[in-house]
Image 1 (cartoon, each protein chain N blue to C red):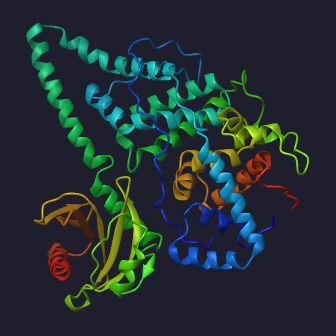
Image 2 (cartoon, rainbow over the protein chains, first blue to last red; image 1 turned 45 degrees about the vertical axis):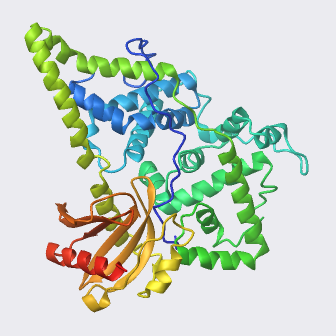
Image 3 (cartoon, one colour; image 1 turned 180 degrees about the horizontal axis):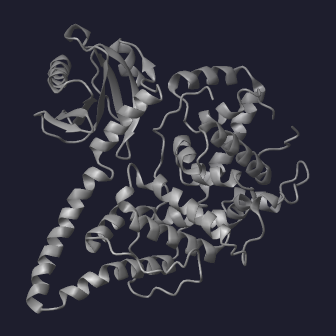
Length: 219
Length: 249
């Protein structure tokens, strides 16, 4: 790690304001981590706390869901994990120091590990690290997937990202989709910046192979 | 596609804009003369470009928003039930509630993402990571052009060595989601960070204290200035005066 790192670069992520949803039609939890629908302990000033929550956390609800989705690789599980994490964030909002997004995503990540530990394996396809990179295309021939990605097909790109094993996928999602700095990714994943850098490099190489950008990773 | 082994990770950092100006220039010079590293860098940029071109991040489904709203409403519900005890009390506490809500909005500024907090954070970060400056020089004619093309405004730069505040250099920082210029000055053994970004503020300097730091803010010519340091407040106000005097003209 020789480079000094700048904390300044961060484009606005694709966060969408929360607020389109209606009140009161919450459907029962599907037995997510630690019973996602458990009643919230009431903070001293509930309405103020809810306001504060919407102000600080509201803009990052999409990011919370997206990270949960890429970690769990399952829509229903991601929703449970994200909800659990968001409620945890609500209950612990007074412990927030600094920017809310890395703080929230740390909670999402922990909620994901809780969920995995709880052994809810109905929908997981097995430990992520075991997923092999399938069918490398013949040299000089673009795979169908690579062609779709090149044409901006979000589903193909998402599938390709999901094929990147952990912990490399996580680094890629936090850095390239959520636009977090190396420092923030290190903070969220609890590893040194150098580790973040090598994970990111591997993730991009694997994704690049699927995209047909990186030709051959012989070494 | 095999970059120099010691350069591979740095090529990613370069593509990510995570290297400071000095290291970036050094690496770019190497890449210019090393086809393997150049090829690797091009691949990294291509992967990043394809990732950026297609929105791969997921948006939270409406059902998650609904579940969240319901849970939050439930958290607030017991309070509202208590209020329904009598119409008058309800109206009264409703008004108080509204007041409390607006107070909460104001109160959240200093704890959450307040500009002051971010500035102190940036100051602390600059000292910790030894990422004090991207461009290190006491020559304002070097610092000023360095910001060209990195910012959409031209921060005034002055060396205040004669007044006891020598200019150390400048760097880019990010405050409140936008790019800011940070000028770094010394005062004896202390560091003063001066953050500058476009905005409106009164020309009268305002002094604040927070977490052991002093902050002075003022406005001038469509720019907002915040000086942050652990020097004594009179020193920081002296700095403010000196800077304004030196950049007026």
